[in-house]
Image 1 (cartoon, rainbow, N blue to C red):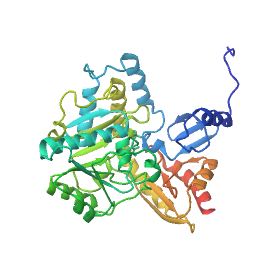
Image 2: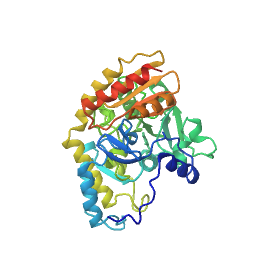
Image 3: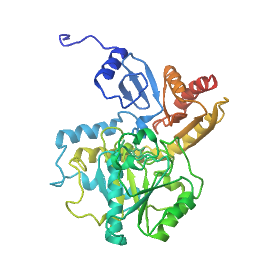
Length: 406
Ligand SMILES: *Cc1c(COP(=O)(O)O)cnc(C)c1O
C-alpha cells in the first residue's frame, strides 16, 4: 500500500478554518463537514453519522448517491457529456418525453439552476404577453407574492420581500407586483390589462412551509383564466414528490400554464432544471432568443431521466404521502411552550417556534439529526423520500429530546 501521497488527515476545525479563510461568507452552515452520503444518511470527516432531514433543500429526494442514478451518471459520463445545443444529442428527447408524461404540458425547456429556470419562465411569460396577449412593449407585469423565494439573480431578488436578499444589490428589475400570499382578493386587485403572469410557490417552503388555505390555488387559477394571465408555479422545492403528490399544485384541481422544476429533477447529482408549458406559450420562443451552454446537455438529461424513473419505480410520491402523514402525526405530539405550530404536507414539514430555531438545529446535529432553520424560527424537516418508518422513529426520539428541552 502506498502512503507517499497521504497528507495528515484534516479535522473538522481545519476544514472550517480553511473555508472561513478562503471562501465568501454568504452562508452560515452548521459546523459539520460531510464527506460521504448514502440513502438518508451522511457521514462527517470525524466518522460520525447523521440522518439528513434537509435533503439539500429537497434536491436529494431520491436519497444520497442513489445507485441507479450513479450508474447512469457513470455510463453517460463515459459516452458524451456536453454537446451544446448547436448540435442535437440522443438524451434530450428522452427527457422531454419523461417531462411531458410527468406534467401533461406538451413542451419543456431545459436549464441548469432553479434560478435560471425561474428567469426563463418570466422571459417566456413576458414574450407571450407581448406576442400573444398584445401587451404594449415593455409594459408587461408579473404578479408575485410576499415572502417568495425563486432564486438569487438580480431580477428574482428584485421582487423579494426579504431585506437581506435585496439590501445592497439594487438597482432592481421593474415589472413585478408583490401581493400578500393566500389572499385571493389581493391578486384580483393587482391584475391589470398588462399582467402577463402570476408566479407562485404552491407552498412557500423557504418562508417556513407556509401552506395556503384549501381552494386558494384554484381561485387564483380561475382568476388567471378570466383575465388571460398565465398561471406559473415554481415547483422547484415542492415538486417531484416532496409534498405527497408529484406536484404540490395537485393538492387542488388546477392545471398551471407553466411549471418550473429543478432540485430533485437530478436527484442531487448535477444541476438540471426545466420549464414546462403548452404550445401556445412555449411556441413564442424562436431560435436565438434564449439559451444556455449546459442546458439540455446529455449528462444532465440522462441523470434527470433516471432520477424521474427512480421516483416512479420506488413509488416515492406515495411514500412521501404515507411517511409524511406518520411523521407529522408524531411531531404534532411534541410539547413545549415555544412551539407555535407544526404543519406540513407529505415530507415537507415545518415546526414553527416563537424563538430562533438555530440552537435547536445545532442541538439536533449533536444528536445526529440534520436540519436547518428557515426564516429564523422554523425548523424545516424534509428527509429524503426513501426514508423508512424506523428512521423516522429514530429521528423523532431525538427531535423530542431536543425540542422538549428548549
Ligand atoms: C431552491 C429554489 C429555487 C432556486 O434554485 P437554485 O437551483 O438554488 O437556483 C427557486 N425556487 C424555489 C421554490 C426553490 O426552493
